[in-house]
Structure formats: structure tokens, C-alpha cells
Image 1 (cartoon, one colour):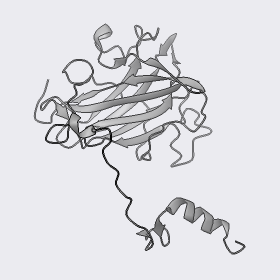
Image 2 (cartoon, one colour; image 1 turned 135 degrees about the vertical axis):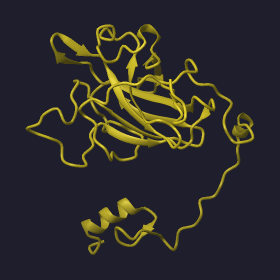
Image 3 (cartoon, one colour; image 1 turned 30 degrees about the vertical axis):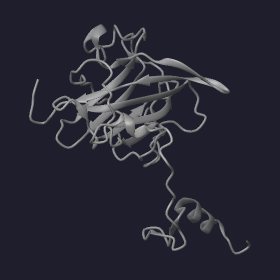
Image 4 (cartoon, one colour; image 1 turned 120 degrees about the horizontal axis):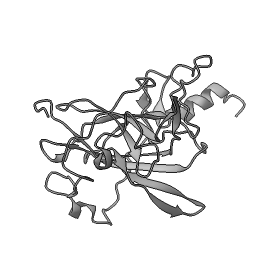
Length: 243
């Protein structure tokens, strides 16, 4: 154990079943295939012949509304399923949904999502120009790849509303950028039903009460606490159509 230094420990913790130095990852020669298990829940009975669940999108069949990019987008965020750090301050929130094609009315299985947000105090990691985050820190920022059924899910905390001057405040929101081959890139935001700042927000009130960017969450109780659960389906426009 004395010869097992800190660098080796870090390398092993990051590599898992990988062998060799960083940049030359290969599977360890002693690794074996992970054994399969039977489909005890009969999940396949919910799928059509192409393996797509027989489900429908939340809300209407219409393209999701566009919204502003905002000043705090940063490209290249890591791919992960948790936006905030473990035990981050704030109310726990899980957002799930599917990406749909308006032209086919079927899930889009090749979409990549950028998701970013403010923290429980309405602050972005880039708010303070005198103390900017370290490059590649990506606090409260992730990317996601949907599965073969267009499904995505992530865990975070509900971001706080924040003032933008002139007596106005932006409602609580989460930023999205969605890209998929054959579809127009969509930059938009998710909002929460009942937010008192929605009616006066000069950016987010797309469609007013009928906005397809505003979702209702529900409280889910679990051992040791609870969290809010919301569904945010996104419908993309094809590159060959316009509205």
C-alpha cells in the first residue's frame, strides 16, 4: 500500500475499468462482460415495433416557443444528470421530459440539450466579474443526450427569481438549448406555474396563460424529505418547415 501514491489513486478512481494512462484508455484485460438480466417487468410490452413507447407529449402538438439566450450561456458543459452540486442550497427539483419532432409526431432520439440556471439566490456563476469561475468549472450547467425514446431527466434545485433593474424581476426559470439533426436549434426557457413575476416578465410571457414553456410541478414525498417533480416536453420544428 505504501507504493500506491495519491496520483495512482486518483487515476484509478477516474478510470474504473480503464487501463493505461490518461489519453490512451483501454479496457482492462481482466474485465468481463456485464451479465444480462431478464425483463421481469415486461417493459417491452409498452414498445412498438421500433422500440418507441406508446406515449404522447405533455401539452399541445405545437412547436415549443423560443426565448432569449441570455448573457450567461457557456458552451462545452459536461454531460451529467445533476445540475447542482451535492447538497446544494435550495428546494430539490427533478425535471423530466421528451424531445418530439413536430413533423413526425414521434420522439427525437438524437437530441443534445444544454441546461443552465441561477442558484437559490438568483445568482449565476458568472454574475461577479471580479470573481469569475475557473474555466471549465461549469457550476449549475450541464449537457444531456436523450435516450432512444427521446427521454431526458436531471436533478437540480429550483432557481430563485432575481431583479433586473427598473423595479422588474425575472421569474424563476431554467435555460435550454436543444439541437438535433434535421431540426432547428431551439433556445428557450422553462418557467413555473404560479410564479408572481410571470405576468410582468418582458421575456418569458410567451403566449400568456397558454404558454407551453410554463409547467406545473408536484410534490413527491420520499424517505427523509421531499422534492418537486416537473415534466417539460419540447417539440422541435423541422429544418424544412417554417411557422
